[in-house]
Structure formats: structure tokens, C-alpha cells
Length: 128
Image (cartoon, rainbow, N blue to C red):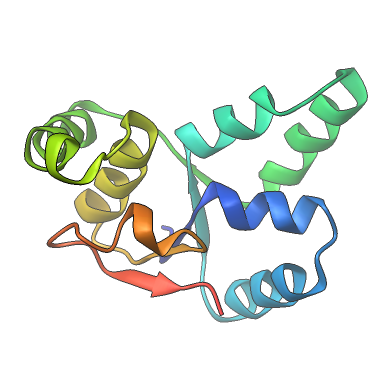
């Protein structure tokens, strides 16, 4: 079972070969099982410009536990949107990713702290 959920922004940096992101991911993987939300997988696929990039993404995500959206995560995401959409501009994808971490009781690591820092009950780790 995953012990840390990694946000999309960090995986994009890894795919771009940004050394800090690559090193950080290697450290996390050496210490614990890493998960990604199904939403993150979809966001990575949407960023593909051709079949070669899509195949690369499909191969890359195999190293992580894919955490699917289920009814409990959906209900939590709806609750988060009800609470934070108007006051903080929470987006659907971010609500689903945060809800995945909350429901599974694991930390979320993200470069975009501003997207999540206001969510009560979310253990948010800084990227670096």
C-alpha cells in the first residue's frame, strides 16, 4: 500500500529531467511505497503530444501504485469542494488528489503548496 502520494507537478518535473525532482523521487522511493492518483495519471496523459510520449508516460507510471477514485474519495472531494471552492478556488482535480491522500491516510507531496495548504486534515509535505 502506498505511503506517500506524489502530485502531478513533481512527476512533470521528473519527466523533464529536472535533477532536484529526480533526486527527490529517488529518495522517497527508497524510503516508502509511492502512489499516484488516477487523476495524476490522466493529467500526465493529457500532456502527451504524440504516441511516443504517451507510451513513455504509460511505462513511467508503472513504477507507482495507481490509486483509483472510488465512492469514498469522491464523497470527500465533493465535501472539499463545498468547503473550499468559493473561498480558496479549489479545483476538481486538486480536490480529488487531496481526497485520495485524506481517505487513504497518507501524506501528499506537492510543489504547488498554495493549491492545498488550506485543506484541514491533509498532511501536506513540501517538495524540497
